[in-house]
Length: 378
Ligand SMILES: [Zn+2]
Image (cartoon, protein in one colour):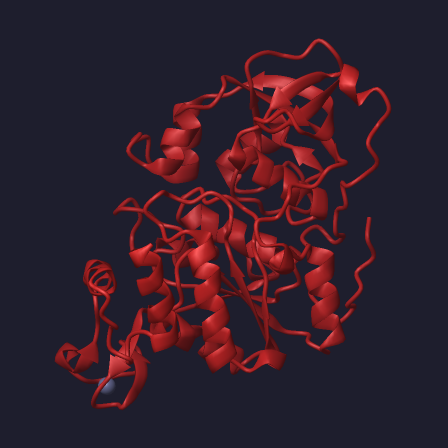
């Protein structure tokens, strides 16, 4: 366990930051080796660094069942989504090694149990649908048939895609503490940040000490903007339009599950481990297609008592530039007709960028648009 460096910061979920990194055990090469999917590798890396505190490994049956039915671990602590390791068969030994597809070894699991699970039931509970056109459900249906549970010891961390943005929870906490921050708002994103999201991060920042821009860099759908392009967009935006002493940019190593409401809870709990006291939840957070209602990812927070999650959600509407207000606004704050609002659909934006044209400055900062146009060209 790592002691909480910033005593003024919110406590990690469950009270202490888990550290499941450790030395490479002797004779690890003689163990049975299981090959992880990219999603499982992302989860493993977050288990190693405490991003998934209080989890110390892949979930056992009791926690799994409890999470599906009640959105709480067996201990009663809130937890929204399964963190499980799918296998073909129960291993012979009581320890197994975990590898990626190239055979590189990362960790050892002390095997607690291997158990059956019902994919359709998990889909319905986690994703609110059993439709295999849903990307999270499709991935679940492709999984191996059993779950293997047990505590992990990670002796080889995954190579981060963006080393300068790779910050473990202990590191973001130390950075917040060093800056004297107590209240920090986390912003999850898997998209470039245009004016609308810049606005809501800044509205949130007005009420707290600091902002963690925490883009997800694990697996996303193939039609999402690639992480490398997004990271470039974040850099130019932060350089030009955010106060450096109030913002930390760091990568969130998780893979997208597209579980909408439940993933919003899961995202919030993970950010609490990184030291955030507040978390931005927009409309259709972590959603895909039309599987979730516009406000489902906000309403689900009401299924917990206020003290249970500890981290405070901050709910936002879509925002836009209003010509009459002469500022960014939302339906909550602007009384004018939508004809006054600068709004571009995602399709329209892609059309403009693909044609090498800058969207209006009221929609996208020109520096960000330039990065995207360049990415479309290549
Ligand atoms: Zn207005």
